[in-house]
Image (cartoon, rainbow over all chains, first blue to last red):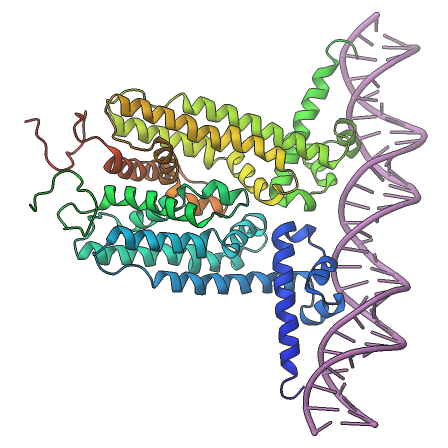
Length: 224
Length: 224
DNA sequence: GTAAAGTTAGACGCCATTGTCTAAACCGTC
DNA sequence: GACGGTTTAGACAATGGCGTCTAACTTTAC
């Protein structure tokens, strides 16, 4: 067991995790068979039982794995939120694109939402941690970031939590149905959805007193 | 088979449909057992096989039943959309409450979204018809209703389809997570979510030229 | 090369479920 | 009360998946 023996095991483990995520996501927990997971992973069934004692253990490991990946991605996407009022529309649009593309409409996001609906009742604590560190984190973090923008008077927001949830909801508005039905949006669709969302968000929360880099003035431009 | 013998069968059929919807919704198709459905329906297993030849037949009947009910409810809710610009905020808020309460956050709505995610790939045509007559109908109908309001200059909307999707998205923004995790919002939560949504929607799309029945003026009241 | 660990294919018992079948019980109509 | 249709409980074979076991094979370390 000494030294680098772990490497082969590690590759197998990840191969199994990926295959199991695929099959669990397509079939659900009950309809997913160990044999099919083994076939997809190009691994013997016994190997699966060697690494994960039973089906439930494997399932929990899969969910935790995807959750960690999704949380890391969310964190990195949140770090790209625009921090200045310059080009606010473009900055927010690019952020909304990344949020949809990498966190909400991507494979992991769909996987977790699907699983939380089908198996959430059987594993409350498992998905509760995702709720707190996934969507919950998104709302609180976005709320703080919006507060920063509002403090620099780029936005006029009364309730930051509400505004954060509304930003996410608007960003999803045009893609929700597509992702619910299993589709994946193209880059053009992502761009268009984000632009629609940010335009409406800024119409509602944009501070007309703040000078803007570009774009048509909302009601009256008094700066001239 | 003459006369009213059907009544008893009809009651059994509905009892089975309800029970099957309950079990399918909780367990999913694969993990739902006919025995459990029979127990919930207070009916013998053989009776289920008498009415619905096999498990798949029963499942399809359940989905169609729930779909029809949901579509009828959606239609009746859509007919309560406010048609005048008076009390627009209150009218839209009440409409948003009804939309969430009776169509989106209710039992049937959660059931259909859950099922479309888990079994959508196995029954594409079944859920495609729901997509068209459910969410699709909602968007197109709401788009037309918003266009009517815009035509009477109560709203200033450039793209009605986008505005319709955004209205629904905003109405859901505060409740999305709760319903995803199985919770059911209280009346207060419904009211609050709808009010937040409509306030933002009107900040974005409200026509400042139109006189308003009540509420604080947005920027400046020139009517004095 | 050898030994130890890990992997593989296959067989096996076990259990849950599906769908069928049968005999008995139930219910409404005549 | 007799009869046709419906429901019921239980038995039944067939299927398929889970988890275990074994014997052979491959890989890695020394």
